[in-house]
Figure: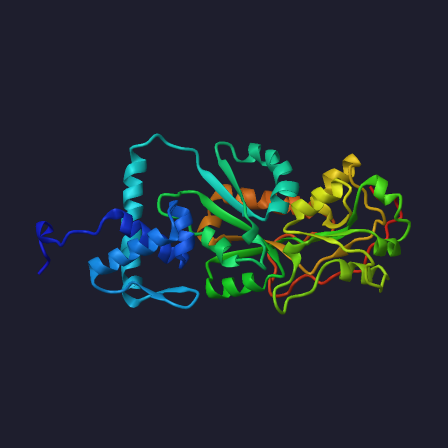
Amino acid sequence: MTTPPDRLPPLPPLPLLRSFEAAARHLSFKLAAAELCVTPAAVSQQIKALEDHLGQPLFQRLTRALALTEAGRALLPGVRAGLDALAAAVHGLQPARAPVLALHAPPSLAQHWLLPRLAEVDSQLPGVEIRLDSRADAVEAAAGAAVLAALDPPPGDAAWHLALVYGPGRFVAAARAADPELLVDALLTPAHGPVCTPALAAQLTRPEALLDAVLLHDDTVRPAPGGPAWGWPQWLAAAGVGAAPRRAGRRFSNAVLAIAAARAGQGVALAARPMVADELAAGRLVAPFGQTLAAPYRYWLVRRRATAAHPAVATFCRWLQACAADEAGAPAGPADPADPAKPEPPAHPSESPR
């Protein structure tokens, strides 16, 4: 017989349930704490208090990971539905807000390629607020799982979430195999080439001159274990330069810093052409040899099937793919992320480099 409502056992406090839902979604106390603006220790204490209240464990504390117990898996759908119902009730009393499209992207792509173009899509998405989240973990060698977690917003976040991920696609392929609701499109395969200031370029008469220059390295393209090698050694080899640089280089944590260092005259950066197109057009940077090499990495557009069904999301994705198609050699549309782009030989344009 069903227990009358007035005889139901008391519910645990709402903050404990919110901490449980966030930790279960991220499978990380640290990420849950960042979302809830508390410390990981506070989340751990709240989970322990909830487990004490229920009289059974909800998580398995593994060496460097979390996993839900059978009780945790049974509890999660109801807690998530309850929090969603509370959020819907509260939002129902608030004035209507503009729909939000949240895009998660690597810093270099967001700053140098995407941001300058965003105004173009405004007329196609009237009344839609676009939220750009630039995060380093949108690079595959970093915590790619965090990007996929961003596609599952917390309760009450009604935004449509999409992600752009940079890498050879192995983690994307694995994620799609594990979750058939993921849609993955190959968006952009950027060609890379040396860029530097005009003053420095005047000293570089041929590719061999790079051996005596300060080479700037972007560490976000360091391959994961077993991944394809990519960087200055591969470009120099393709350009017919087999020797090692004779000067110490400089390393930067992302392409934004490497490009800024090149603009400041600190050396020569191996930059993706789409990321420096404006700098080249303005003459702040030049491509001293005009030779480019396609990296064995791509930018991937990732979203959930339910998200892609919204007309505004479909419009935004078509616009992104059209922008990518404007770039020389950029693939657009669906592709198999298990088959990364293969490097192409350097191009030797007859015209003067920009």
